[in-house]
Amino acid sequence: QGLDDPICPPVQCERFLDALASAPGGGVPHAYLTFEGEGHGFRRLDTLVRALEAELSLYAQTFGFEAA
Image (cartoon, rainbow, N blue to C red; front, side, top):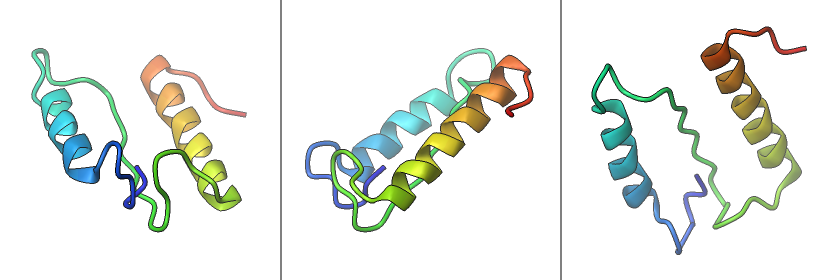
């Protein structure tokens, strides 16, 4: 989540996260990372790499595989 996102501001995303966490059956697996200086769509290489690594980690944890 870009902290400078004017289209989907962090507060909107945080409300969605609350809904995921309180979904029936113990919630929906999710991860939430914030990035200072980013808006709607990531531009910095370090942000892109960190976001993709986190996404792969979530998939590995959720679907039970070891990321290479």
